[in-house]
Amino acid sequence: MAFVPQIKIPATYMRGGTSKGVFFRRQDFPEAAQQPGEARDKILMRVIGSPDPYGQQIDGMGGATSSTSKTVTLDKSDQPDHDVDYLFGQVAINKPFVDWSGNCGNLTGAVGAFAITNGLVDADRIPENGICTVRIWQKNIKKTIIAHVPITNGEVQETGDFELDGVTFPAAEVVIEFMDPADGEGSMFPTGNLVDDLEVPGIGTFKATMINAGIPTIFLNAEDIGYTGTELQKDINSDAAALERFETIRAYGAVKMGLINDISEAVARQHTPKVAFVAPATAYESSSGKQINESDIDLCVRALSMGKLHHAMMGTASVAIATAAAVPGTLVNLAAGGGSREAVTFGHPSGTLKVGAAAEQKANGDWTAKKAVMSRSARVLMEGNVRIPGDTF
Image (cartoon, rainbow, N blue to C red):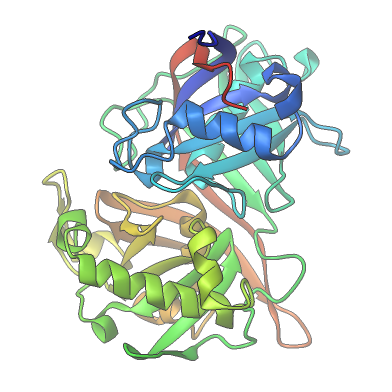
């Protein structure tokens, strides 16, 4: 019996923020996968090692967590005043699908560096020394993101002394601006309310702030669902019943936000919306053993991604947190002490993060976000080719 050989696809394995993913130039895919569709999805799943009923992704590049089951496809942009198109694919671990419904804010931190190194940014825009401003068109959500990438001797600087909680080693700081991060097609608060009563049959009715900024997110009060807001991964991810409750809450919230028509559709849309819970600032010990003092933060936030409590905080959810905190009266704003603010520092399982956001109320009463700003870091881990069986697609 004859077996087909493996094929090579040029790729780069990168850390961006607190995530890792496999980065591709669109032009390097086999021709059948250079456009969205089944061929591309099958290739990306095989690269990552999904679907894996064992949940380990042993036969692929994935790391069996939502933070490490990710792909990025980049292309020179045809959008005016943009350098690169950025398409993010969240690969399910044990199910056969790629979720294209949202962005990854953490991997955004690596997009500018990859684009510069791989010829997707015009040479005359790259200084010999200084900061290269990379204009990114985020194709999943159709938004502009600006990455400020440090350059030394004409090359991307990856090493530095910037420390990011959730990442073990320091690196160079990359400042990211998420421009107009709210949903441009509707209200930033899809229900029209800053706080809703979210009814979840069989579980309860909860106060909820549902926002579409950075990524669609459902915020709950930690106390209302039996938590303190200082939980670590082990406290929730080992509790199957709790994870099932969160998924049910997420499904009903997705319907109320208008993202899906029926809760049954949530299973095929795992990447969005996110569910998070908030609490007033409280001292706790992070997953690394670092002591977080009440005075260090404005509030505590914990968020779930792809059905599990995230080890730190998703970048896009951080945008949602900062934007909601900037709007007086949301659950996030109230947990942070209320009032007006242009930045918020929150505690997450791995430590703390400060994010700036500017929101304003329009004449009709709706709120809009101008931008959110945070610092990330990025580093190339490996580059060359990934290999997959030639009959994958």
